Image (tube, rainbow, N blue to C red; front, top):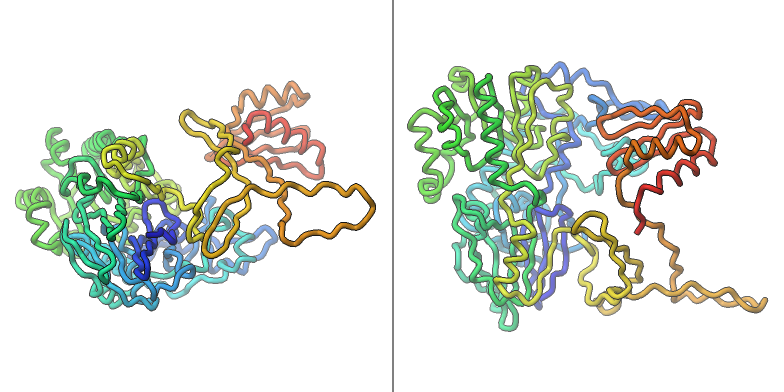
Length: 599
């Protein structure tokens, strides 16, 4: 078996392609929705604030993008229907994919794009809870966007020549030409009709060549890891798994033992945020909010209700939970029993929308469960516009895969309190290390970062002996690689780069070989942070006596008043701004480099 392609650039929303002989298997089809953070929210009612935002004016004074791009509190947003970043579709003819294996409902959101927009004619396998909850998520996504139609679409800014003129993060967005608008409900229904339901430990034969088996991953209702086995080898695909004791069935580790290869993906991106600690912090902030007036909260599946009731603060709390009555009875009655108990005691109420009964029943204080975590569409946009102006209100973020600061950007200035309590029960690096020892896997392939995305396979790496790692943080070391990729007969080998040619010893003209490419020396990479106080002292030692430091939202600005020069120091970049004084710029650059490591 060969892991041929990694079609997704998102570490927790995988889309990989495995091939065995003539059988091609796609592992998950996650949809990257972080691209929606570049768009303006879709308000349910006309928003005077959003409609009056000024259009973008480029540095040269051009205004041809003022209809597509709007400025808000120092950020630039696309004024159009939000678009999503699809898995890569040009590397592989998707009509050759025979089977798609789905791990959990988060990793199936791109399914309609693959089944309805390509020549895919294969079969999709997933558990029943995964399909049912995935259907709800897709329906909610489609309805949230379709009920707020936009008359205009924005495409001019996607031109590469135009995009490079834009400010960050639009300037740095990757493959924006591949972003697509949301699918429709007919496409969702057509995609779901291609799914064949499976149960845990059920063995499915694929064309007599491969046998696949779903196992409980312990992460979410119906979430699965997959065993892919032939007569010669056993490959285990572990995606979005958890060892914690929550509402799903425990992770099946025993069936992973003695695998030839273990493919790991969907690990937590916040390993330092302990889920138990985050739940405690969430409950603490929730209690404080309830004792004041109001709390807006979204996307927490395991409501720690006992923590709230123990504080004696649940007497007047009402919750809005989107459409739980649609969940399938087989797994709702056993897994969501606590929700029905709250409904029976009138502590939890669910509404199809914010209109109608919700407006009549609404009382304060209350907890509102709503979405989407991007804050770009859905009922949450209305609540943010309505309650964002009061410091008595609170919004609590628990979604780990979205930047809460970017989500809040189009609502600034914001008076309400914002609390970030990312709750992620997926495997962390320490748990993975223990798992690998217990299951006694022969080889492991970790797809946290998608290296070699455009290569079908990397067979050998002859450069290991030449790598000199440099520790940049405790426990984290980096090393640069300079190599030549040699490709032949679908074999890809990294080789040592050719030595630079020696200068000719005679005056004869020497023929230059076309076989050996010219290898230019790489610029060293920089790592570290610049301590502002020490940097100011260094500047004063070198004759700069008029140094002034200003704090900004992203870092610091060091102002050399006499030289009329700015040094902008941020977390991931440093800019030296001086007009027509190259010697001064070089001198300041060298002083900055003294505080950074090179590797």
